[in-house]
Amino acid sequence: MSELFICQAVPPRWGTAYAALLAQAGLRDEGDADATALIVEEEQLLGCGSLSGKVLKQIAVSPAAEGQDVCARIVTALVQEAMAHGIPYPFLFTKPNNVRLFRSLGFYPVAETAEMVMLSRQRDALGRFLAPLPRWEEGITGSVVCHANPFTRGHLHLITTAAQQCDHVLVFVLAEESGPFPAADRLALVQEGTTHLSNVTVLSGGDFLVSRATFPAYFLKDAQSVENARCDLDLTLFGQQIAPALHITRRFIGEEPFSPTTAAYNRRMKEMLPTFGVAVTEIPRWENISATTVRRLLAEGRLADIKPLVPETTYVYCQRHFGGDPLRP
Image (cartoon, rainbow, N blue to C red; front, side):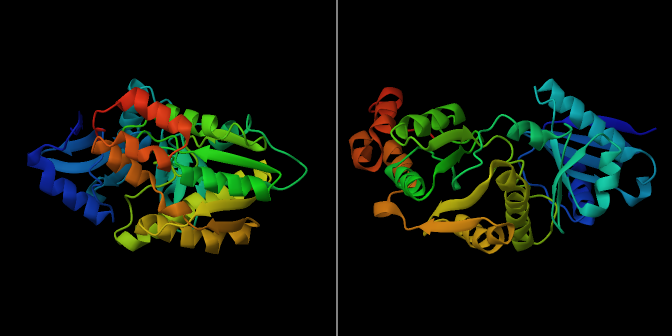
């Protein structure tokens, strides 16, 4: 009889079989799993799946185990694991031909491209996210999506430019926890740094704007195909559903000379969003300021050197939280 195990890391004895099972399904181990479920029978690995943050991923079943409810057992175990960690509504990504299976397991489609479908355990998850957000029937509504890690004068210049060209601007700050600046603090810094712009509203991007949920990276073999699929899903979700719901017709982005991934994302955005009726305006980088530079200076203990690069509110925050101590990654 088969047994199901939940582990933080795949035991070495199953490492080779695990890698082979993923490869057979056209998947790869992303290396960021919080928990992995394995189903084993008589020393044979029949199926696997992982939970990474809010996302169920790397789900694979051996052809020898098809029709034995292995996938259902794995998904059920991972959903229970997510709930135990305070995540009642995890996301899942799959190829379009697998949607019917996962719908039968209690997942609901959120967005779809030719390559990928995003599903959530919560019915109408996107609608629930959008419902309380402000929207205006009159005038031009623009948008900015930023990490603001931390909020710099470059971000402020981008938002100010958008505010000058639109009647209303919605700024979405990435909600993903990463690095030394907590998501709640990054959101507050952008809000505090833009209070003088009366037509700007700053909001959390939640799970639907450039998050781990909208950027799955696990199920296509070819790295470039994965990158394209990431961009296409995120941008389809924005252009097809978020922008129309909030009457957004313009999106503003900053020029990105340093990060190839962000530069590729920007190029794809300029190709895709106009097809949904959203114009894309790229703003040259302001005085070559970057959040990466600010973090590097803080890591070197050079607090005073960031002052010309950030709004006063960000500088005061860094004084309060880091003082003269080097920033920890």
